Image 1 (cartoon, rainbow, N blue to C red):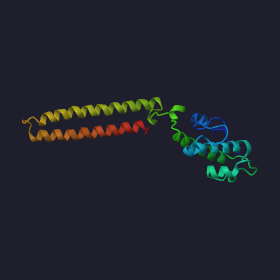
Image 2: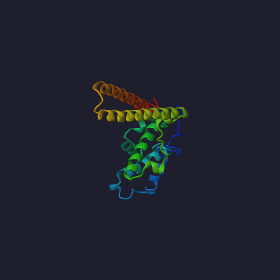
Image 3: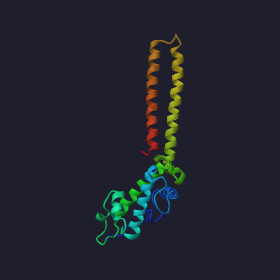
Image 4: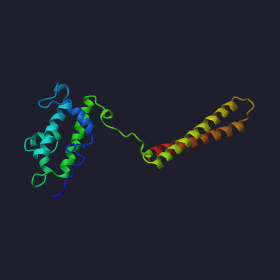
Length: 198
């Protein structure tokens, strides 16, 4: 029988949304339904799922096998080992469903992940020192191209309103303006690619 890994599970207190789960557990009574269960269906579902979860890990679903299947949406017996032991597939599917129950209950109870967990919002491109430098350089080049375009556009507008400017000069200004717009767009795209780490 293959060895299973319990490390990143709620059973080991290392689930994906562990801190959020702890906040929700404060809203669940030690026995019986949650308060106003009809108005808090996701929290009540989490309570029932947690009881099944405990039974799975503690008793091998001796008490709640049928309820587990109903709540989690799959037959755990099909994923258990020959001796009714837990398999990695059963653990992984169970943990994923617990993640879903927790997120739905947190949304219902107006709990934010940011209150309970640290969320990393670092752009992918800034996850290394080299990436951060590349993003900063791309941003500076984009800003330089934008300033150059703005300055040139100001000159063009000034010249257009100058009645002494001939048509050839105006055409040259227009051509240069198109070129600078193109350069700015290229720099903008390069900046976005740098941010997303491409």
